Amino acid sequence: MSKLVQDKVNELFEATKNLQSLEEIRPYCEQFNQWLNQNTSYNINSLGTVLSKVGFYKKFKLIPLEQGKNATSVPKHDGQGNVTGYQLKHYALLLCGLDDKDWDERNQTTRVSDRLKSQGREIDPDTYFGVAGELLDSQDIHKVAVGLIAATGRRPHEIVARAKFAAIKGETYQVMFTGQGKKRGENPVFPIATLYEASYVIKKLNWLRQQPSTKKLLAEVIQEYPKDIEAQNRAIDSRRNGSLNRVVRDYFGGENPVLPIRSGEEQPNCKALRAAYLALATGRDCSGSIGSKMLHAARLAGHFVKENPNDGDLQHLVTTLGYADYYTTKPVTFPSLATREKPNMENEKLSSIRVLPTDLEAIRKIQEEWEAPNQQSVITKLIQSYKDSLSVSNNLQQTQQQVTQLQAQVKQLETTNNSLQQHNQQLETTNNQLQQQLAAMETTQKQPSMVTLNATELESWLEKKIIEMLHKVGIGETMPSAINPVALNAVAPPPPKEEIDWTTKTDAEVWGSKVQGAAVEKIRRSYLAICQYNDTVATGDGDRLAVTNQALRDLSRCNGLFVRDWIEEHKDEIISHNAKFGMENKKDPRNPASYANKGKDVDKILSLINDEFLSGEGYRKVRI
Image (cartoon, rainbow, N blue to C red; front, side, top):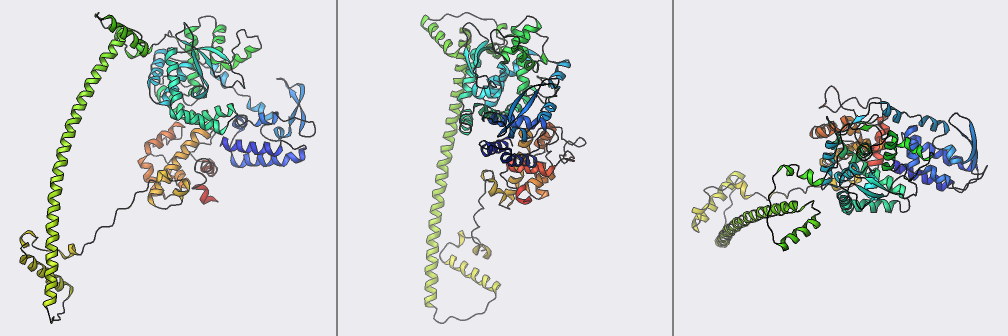
């Protein structure tokens, strides 16, 4: 939905940027407000955030303002409501979006203070490091990205696109970081802590950036917003936050969560990883006073990066306080990837071996290439490689045996095929002889007698004659004793129907068809559209839609029995999605047809889902 809002903001800006009177500007603003009221369900909090993200306020602040033409003077107030001065504001900013009263109401939030008032959430460093290391070792881009966020505390768009990590000489658990988001044109460079070895973190970040899906995502957002870095960052977060947060929930959440849920949140997310990183990195690297720890955490978060901040700069510590609700009572160690992979290596007794100088030099070179911690680990890996090669050799021998068996089967099939071809040729020869004899009988028969037979008598007479002819040519013994007239008249079965892969069709093609396969695809796409809407667009303020039989039937326009059968086949996914937002059927969790949608403007929500995720097909096609 934010993409549609951005398009409307751009339309409003282009229509009003050169206008020089309130009378000319007002109609365009009224049309914009009317569109917002009819096509969105944003409240005061979400509307202000969305308009800021799409650049509404930034665009109109760049226009040269003239009092009484395209702008008017408005008072500025301090915290006690006293007028402290005046400023020019474009008429569009006064007529659209939030007014001063709305902003005051929006900013009266107590989320941070509520978190600070609570007892906080304790983290077990060893468990946290174990999960983060497992994700970093993965070959899945989403898991690796979450592992990097957990190990460095960076934002999703920084990890996916902006962050650059450079090694610092003499530092094993620190990197020099560039690519800080939310700095409005600034490009600070400052050191940050890494919870795993810096060399490994740099290696995994480079791996993530080289993946085709990552390159494709960056190319698409650059093409969409070629000169707007902030818009590119928002687009990256919009496309990746859902998948990354799911990894966080799967690996750090659950019944016994590794990362306890923060006050005011429903599930663990990437912001929670950022808060956990600040708690662990500060606890490990800073042992001073509370104030020095806050300053250290703020530097790690990038809330300010000056070497010697003045008192005015310290106001940014308020932002850091929003991440200060995690703590640990256990010592924070320096985990190593090598020790994590071989936790019992130190308990094993090591033996010495003698090698030639040339072999020792080769081992050292391999150690450098593999970035191994010691020569012993190189030898261990070489031995494991030898074992793997033996396993490959055994598998190759088994494969060769299977190939030999298959070749023998092929020869046997060729022999059988040749026999069948010879038998077929004999049958063709016999058939030709029969046709010649029948033709000779017809020519010698001068005065055929007319006999009237019914269908049954005719079939019996034909069967008798054919059998007699077969005995005369000497093949009667090889033919069946009775011939089924029905079999003689049988025709080849019609070719099988071509199966259609409806998942590859467009929404228009799917909703334009009435076959059963298309109906199943309509229901599937409707389910995915509801899930995507709940995960990315819905704010949680009573606007999420539970997946029910009625909702899928209204959105897909399919028969209720089809919908019921589809829900039965996918009930686990549906129950999981509804439960994620607290919309499950409390009395019967296996039955997703609950009353979770009661009291909601279902038609409006369905229309939004249809427009945003189904290309205007399905629900809208019926409602128009």
